Amino acid sequence: MKLLRWLAPLLLLSLTPVPPDSPNVLFVMVDDLNADLATYGHPMVQSPHLDRLAQRGLRFDRAYVQYPVCNPSRSSILTGLYPEQTGVLTNQAAFRTSLPDVSTLPQWFQQHGYHTARVGKIFHYNVPGHIGTDGQDDPASWDEVVNPIGIDKAVEDRIHTLQPGRFGGTLSWLAVDSDSAHTDDEGATAAIRLMESRHPDKTGKPLFLAVGFYRPHTPFVAPTSYFDRYPTDAIEPIMEAEEHRHDKPLAAMADRPRQLELDVETRREIIQAYYASITYMDAQLGRLLDALDTHGLADNTIVVFVSDHGYHLGRHGLWQKGDLYEGSVRVPLVIAMPDAQVANHSADALIEAVDLYPTLAELAGLPAAPHVAGRSFAPLLDDPNRRHRQAALSVAWSRAGWVNKDLGGVPILGHSIRTARFRYTEWAHGRHGVELYDYHTDPDEQTNLAGTPALARHEAALKVQLGTRRRASQPQ
Image (cartoon, rainbow, N blue to C red; front, top):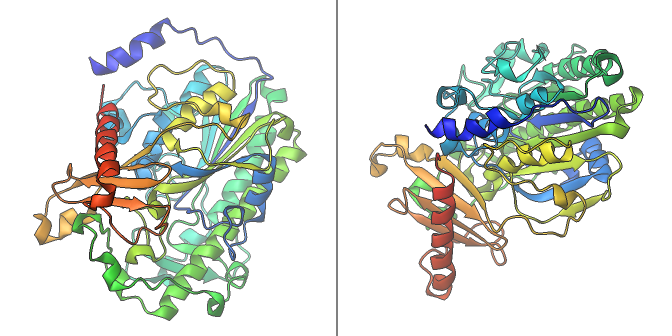
């Protein structure tokens, strides 16, 4: 019955195809990328092509995913629904199980006359295991797909890893001295071919082209020349003091095996590999942007660049993702519009990744999909000083809940809201801990202020606000 309530308006909605000169969409989704980027002010990381895209468009400085793990995040972004509405809160779940007839973001464009194509990881893949396959793709979303595979998939026996035999879920890395193409290189090449072969002048249809880059997801494999750009002696890793954890709930700590034991040199090597992977991925983005110009598409293409979640690299003693701290849930987001009213600007408005679906539909002139829970932020493309949301909601299972006997060895679900000033988090509705951070005085979330008398009024208001947002994000 819930699904029927969502789908009933679709039965009445005319799916009249859009005109062939409607704007194309180049939707670039990157895997495990945080905001350690030049355009976001990082002093070391080289990302010249993303910088170039940001100069053409609008950079969003407060964009947040709704779940800081690949599959739940991607399912949320691509359906326009919150994780508890999709039923996807793990990497193993599938949104079609709960929502067999829901129209995904690319499918909505397809239903309105677009040719939709996927290259690489857009829906979930296990990395590196699924590289070169369909992974956990959604066939209904695409007219055609390409599953690139490169040398990075063939060198697993040489990869440095914290857990022998494991590469995707743990820190692992390798510099490859070879002229052979990596998967993201092959992906960019395939996408460029599609720009030519599925050009609107040839098909009579606008193009929705989704390109999913694998780097910088582990294993951090990139050409040696990209590693050379980041000498390890120039990298100063975060060395989080043990006392910085004393006031944080056990449920909040998404520790992974061996990552608390890393020495300084190993930390430097891991960060070097992550940054090398970013710059290598950025080079492939540059090829896509050049191809838009070469094939005469740049003047009529909306370009979106987004990551599926963040990455820590040592903050709070955490290295990867899956928790509800800023480094894990905040993502880079850049949108460039043809004939943009606003270019080379940034927006401080709070954005949820679930808002991308309705925003792109509006920007392309499509009707709003009635099932979508996100809110369009298209007006920010004209006025980046506008407000959008009072708070951004994120949810995550606690890894600690599964492995820590003090927490009962059971899953613990956390909900968190990020406002302009605060982050407020409850684990199991507060039964396993509450967190409150004031970014005006503590941008690194070092001191948990929950229960502080001076902030009691703010904490009470945030508790009510979180409850309201949590209820609204449940299945309807």
